[in-house]
Image (cartoon, rainbow, N blue to C red; front, side):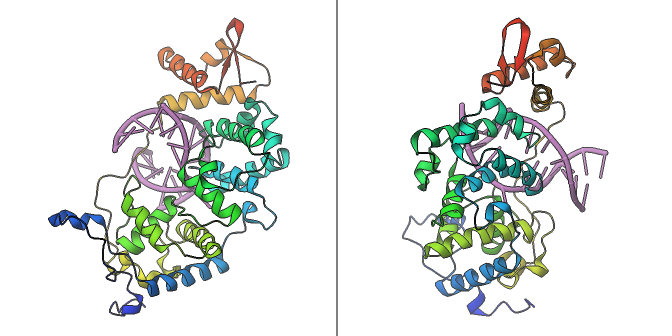
Length: 329
DNA sequence: GAAGCGTGGTC
DNA sequence: TGACCAAGCTT
């Protein structure tokens, strides 16, 4: 299959010259690999987009009649949360709040409650705040421009690009963890991307972005899907990959990750776990909850109080008189 | 730039 | 079985 790496037309590492920069000895190599040439890039587009046409999942926010609001809700929910867990909640939200203005009319607490166990409930608060801003400042329509999207609560670089691209077909570099991993392997020849997004990664992604707007939007979705379904973090299915023969990582023998340890996230015993327990109690109750009930979720009083204070400070919990607490009205 | 922020599934 | 991982954002 990929036994021959001398085929120049399929080699991503060609020799596009770098912009004149200060010659800085060995550190110049840290700028990353050279960008692929136009011919190789065009072939990549076709291979990945053709693969996408055949293998894309049939997700609700990709349906032809899915509006920008559906896309936006999905992007919020998908931040650090798997598709399988998002699907039922997304369906519920869109049925209950079909437009941003519908959500804006609810209390923030209802958004937090309907968020359920998706995790990172501050996202629910921010999505509610974004819906309010859309209703007030954008006539109830999800904005089309990247900078307008970026100004909304809870919308960062990735989400702004994703909504503009997926909902409106605009041309943006959409750089999520899937795409970063695909490019790390395909172009840089490493098993994983750096821990934090680098300028070199943005340069690589920008250089690969199709010039045509509609194709660029397709490419963004296709590379994400490739990362999610084939170029997976743990066990990549290179046998099913449309660009395996051009993958720098494969051509290098699929070397193991060497750099610094990938970020680990502890959970047991942390404030996050306590916050999760507290909020679970409040979500389950339609009435305000006495402090004594909340005290039952965690044995250690100092940490328990700190977690509750944090939830209040974040606006996820509202303290009432008489030691009662509830989701924000 | 690093740390903090939920939850559940997987190997 | 306990890391690791999942379409990030904010401070």
